[in-house]
Image (cartoon, rainbow, N blue to C red; front, top):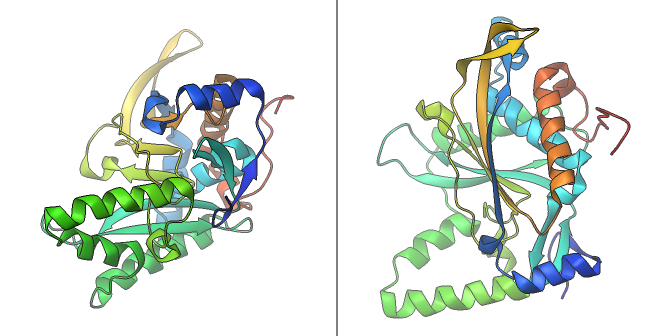
Length: 284
């Protein structure tokens, strides 16, 4: 079955049997929650802000994740209906509040990261999208509009209808309008709980949609590590990552994590193209 914005990928026997034995994404959660040294990223963002530029940590983290996906394309894969697929684009999704109030509307936002994007273009994309939502009357469309309509239906109608939509999602025939602005239809879902002064968490994923990973970014805090036998204070940020183990093995995932660390330790890389090849050793 052909799917929107994705292509079918052939897999080896071991991977296919793993999919057959564990057909649900929620049966295949692999978690990592480890601090990353973001000292250089903090310096970089602070310097950009001093120059009057609107660049945030979230912008940097989102682009660093996208650059990692470009360098490790298996991260852009997902399993549906016991087949492996790969997104034809790289996109990162998140939920944003229209206003900073407890009862404010929440909307799903997807940022498509084009190969030529960099920290400047991504910051503008995110800023323009959020500013648009906060500066004018909120106009729901795509999946955001569908949520409001479906959520208002009574149980006897809503529950079987949602069951039917989950079936169409599995078979690859969910209406295109319900995939637009749907955070579950992206390369990766990101939640920035650091902005709430919270550490990262292990966030649950779902079988719905095509996002194989969800990442919770914690607050940037001072931490200690030993360098050359001496304690050193550094800026640490925990990334709580939940990933579907069927799309890539542990060796591949650890290399991806090291690329993410390398980008954040060398933030000038964020000024290059999103699809820039980053070599951190002789093996890829």
